[in-house]
Image (cartoon, rainbow, N blue to C red; front, side):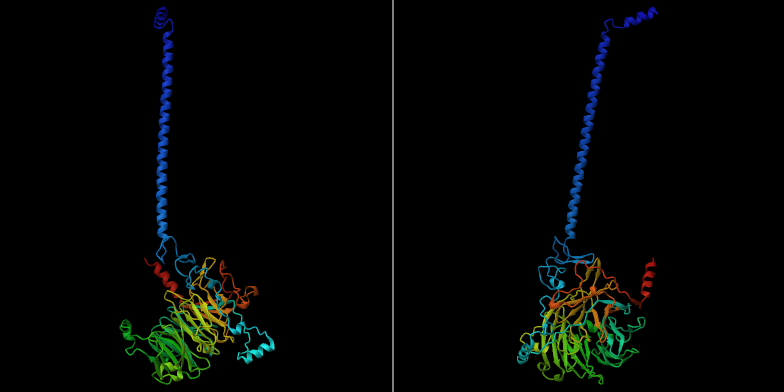
Length: 565
């Protein structure tokens, strides 16, 4: 134990200096460690800041790149497909069409506003001069009546057209035709029978009272049936792109006679003749109910006078300078007066009694238009008015065309701005007058530009007042979403038949509609009291809608095609 204590004491510092130096060295090392730790933390923190800054730089660069790419893509998207300039867009956004800001209004062709805000679209009667029978109020007493009589003015009674709406679809036959409908007419002796033609030359006979009864004749014409007119009994005449005018029996569908065949080489050489520009098509057609004479117009501007008792034309003449003769209309009371319209921008009134003499003698008056005329008709009862549909989006009305013929310029009584000019393969729009309206003021025509009904794109069918230019009602139905260029008033009933695509629709007045929902004739040429054009509600559809699908096999064919690998 002593030896061990001596060794222990010998190894220890008697003044304890070693212990103090160890403590000093231990404290210095601890401080050094702390300094090293703080340096490492600073380096780590600096490294973290450097990484954060680098990450932020990369994020900023990626955002800038993405933003620049977005702007570049946006500029490419904002290239207008109409004027090919950047900075704006044109086209459909949903069911609404956005106009090109560098182009005139599609409806009125004026600048300073878009098509959606066109003043003529909001109020079609703008700048329309009201006719005397619509503006005369009957006031003035005996003195005014004497003054009018002595000055040669007629005492006009203010006429009010019948109530024009609302209409709803009562029945429809869907896909009755193989291709688009081109014409529609009624059987005068059988009020429920409708006849229609299509692009393939088919003629369909449909009973609107018995929706499921219909017959389609496929052998009458080989090409587009342009017009169908009544000639007597169950016989009707057709004009077609085949270059023929035929009389057929609507009861059995047999061709009774061919009044005209304008292509001597026949149908077999149609492709060669068409490429050479020699193929003749028959377009305009009408028939005199008293004499039975049929008048037809060709794509070469020639007018043919056809007697059903003869096998050759009774007379033939150039009426429209080798341009298409689009329409022929016989005067309802004086059947020697004939109205024609063509692609030479003229509507002409002829005296058929002077055919064969000098051209200047049989042509009584001509009315010039700025563009092609789709249709020109006499008013159906008196024939005093002339209504033309021109491809400049104008419907022109002459209240007394015989008096306009005496003026220097022959200007129309009024021009109604309406959307019916199109840029696709459609049957031309035609303004059709109501034959049972005693005032001769009601007119129906389809509209080309669609309207937005709370996200639903529909093409209305418009009913106008010819004497004021006011829009009386818009016929729309959610079941009818296609364009409706073919419309026809019934000769005796208050119904309208529409040909849209391959289908036919029957519109009838909705007698059960509330009085507040009706559309009334505006007073003193004011704006129509129909529903506002902005924020329209989508129509609920017809309450009683009989639908017949004449081609119900098309859906099964499509489904079978989808199943094929």
